[in-house]
Length: 282
Ligand code: AMP
Image (cartoon, rainbow, N blue to C red; front, top):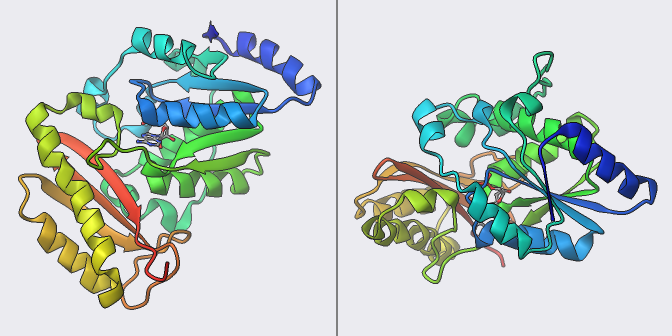
């Protein structure tokens, strides 16, 4: 496995793959890698001739400077884990490699996709995501790029962005990896105490509860019952939304296939995000 820091070096290696019509699989990450990230890399390994992973904590997608400062960074450990995986190239750029002085962020109209949920509570977050992912796609030019459904709204935004900018890449959505009690694996879990983790299990319990009651209620009713159910917790609820999986429009009276409940809660000062497909007719 090679660790590459510059655009020139990675492009030189990858262009040989492109000339030979080999498939390049790409997994962008912000590091502090866990089994969830590794599941994306493993899938990429089975579907491509070479797998590139990037580790870059992107400042433009953090709307809160403290959140950026305390975001976990474990580069040596990450590289050791990647050596054991299907990853052949790790791209580990500095901020000015991704954003050189003459860099211009693309402008993409995301419509509703960046106005609701994360878009509403983290203003500017998805423009930051679009900026970094489009720049990484420009550098790596992958055939297939892998994203976790844990960041459900991010997948919708990236699909819309690649379409709007006509970027020739397949966006592959991968299932959320959870621990034995359902807590979605996340780099931010490293910032939780053992007690916090026990508390955080209530996020998945709330999602599962929503799934159990779905056949008996409208989406609005399920949302309010889930909110009540969540309230027994020490965590602070930021939002629960039940949305159409493609448009992200809030569902109120009618269910659609793939209706998804999205939740964000603060466990201490750590912001945790999760979602579950409620599939009412499934
Ligand atoms: P991050 O490093 O948090 O930006 O995540 C990098 C990629 O890994 C994103 O596409 C995430 O959605 C994905 N990811 C993070 N956690 C998980 C998980 N528990 N299961 C599956 N994918 C995940």
